[in-house]
Image (cartoon, rainbow, N blue to C red):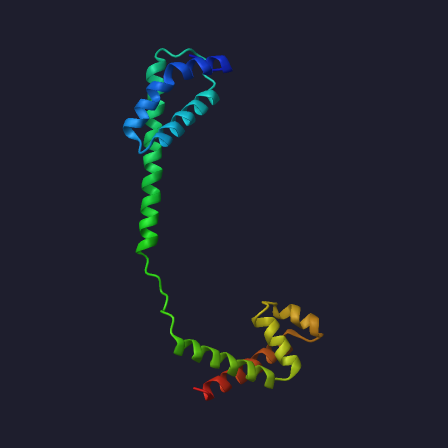
Length: 169
């Protein structure tokens, strides 16, 4: 058996498709799965470049079919174990709590107010560093200062925010 031409594949399809469909239908969940696996087998067969004739084409094709089933079952086990692991992980979400939401909004208001109390340059450096993720060296270049100067502005802002938010507790 050397499935190299479309004509050869057509002959193999006519000869083996009904038997392969029956083989897969007995072992697969649905008709569409059986059809998919039969098609996959013929696609693999078309890619096979057998240089020598096969002694037993039936055995070769049905061994391919059994391997396809085994591979599909293995993939399904992996998918199922992954899905089970994901479902088993506890989701650490707190229920919607209006009081907690209100406290969070109030806290955000306190932080916003404390930020407005900072000098403009200190506030800008702090926000660019913390919220925009700019590096201290980039900020030093941007503001024409040393990295040490940028660090002092960041520390000043953090100290002020800490004092103000702790005072509100």
